[in-house]
Image 1: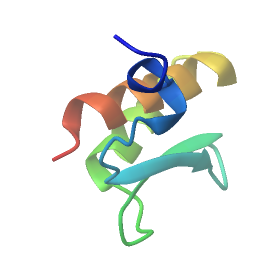
Image 2: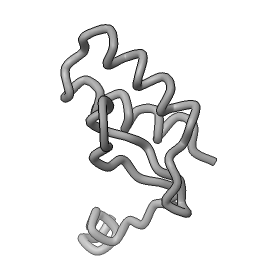
Image 3: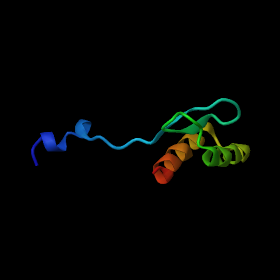
Length: 71
């Protein structure tokens, strides 16, 4: 392999959504490609927060759910 084929900055992965700061009780939410909140994931994260999980854990779960359940 040459250096250009190993340059990770050249890798482009498909994107379908994002994780961003949420308003209200949930510090992080998953948004779809149109900017709407992914409702089933939001409901899960509300329950996750209610179980006294830390904001960093909520963020980690949000990113994991984005990766696992994207199209």
